[in-house]
Length: 194
Image: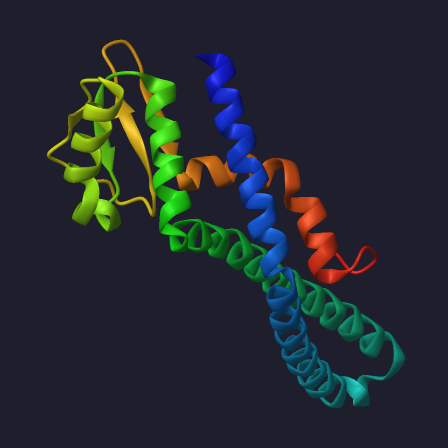
């Protein structure tokens, strides 16, 4: 079961990495636009503070410039984090967009668990019952459909007799993100700009 789960996680990681790489150009362009706006806002912020403190001369100007640089860095960091968050969130949407592959992914998730009560996402409610019935018939399993649906974006949760398994797309992408976030940020923003 561990080997099967490892293979599923490996496939999810591989698929997500492909999806992430495919969205990097778009995210890169968007990030440059956001960063340019942030730099412009920071420049205006800096200019306003410089004019205000000019009368107090060099010491105050240096102090204000330092504060402005910190504010610029804070704004840029917040915008960069926003772009990285969007890239990972978009990867979930891209996974679900390819419905054939998404259904295969759900099938692989179920195969790794063997039995239990399945909680599908609210967004998967339309096909959850028929999908699970078809799966049970095809694989001669006895998964039960939970009456409740989760507020997660995709994937599923399985409540087992001894253990619950979280295979939501958010949980899987979070695992992938831990391993890939520095590399993703470097790709989006450039190695010396992250």
